[in-house]
Length: 277
Image (cartoon, rainbow, N blue to C red; front, top):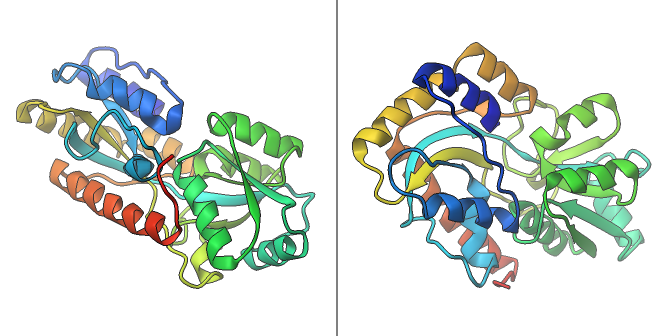
């Protein structure tokens, strides 16, 4: 989602806004670049809420999400989605659970990596539904998607923006959204918690943040400019095409969201028996 926003900001700010993709290590690599940057407003981070999960799944995280980051604006919400290759005779979470129980150890689900919200979502499903499903982590959503499309793996939990075009083309079948609310882009798709009692994951969200110590004047200017950018028709259209729902709000509201998401992940990982590795 960063590119259409960056293009709009380039036009309104009158200087290039460049997207520097630093994928890997469940977001740690990119986040470390941003947290180590000078607090001058020239290096920002496109933050996913799943980064709040890091201290509960990684033994060594080189920054503190709530101390080393300056919140700027909540940009969007986007669900993780449970998808299967159409060769698998499964059309719902209930059918997935039944299939997994009848074929123990034979269902693997791909994710964008170890320690991601998708990883935890699958582990929580396995624990609550009492099924044996194998986590197959990849280094990013793209490689995971390719093997899922190719049939090398049968199921996956991936961000809606990654899989939606392939759901629409019929190359993948969506069976549920991970988070509690139905996705605006696919309103008829049920949530996992509707079929698995007790299942709950925080809504996956995105935001823009900067390094610690970013001056209030810069924060407020960026909040205003990014806030205008994400509601322009071309940006809204591009984000909605990928399954994102545009958000917005104040820096304080993003700070509160970061704190509440952190606490939610703390409880989920404890209940699922997930420990830092």
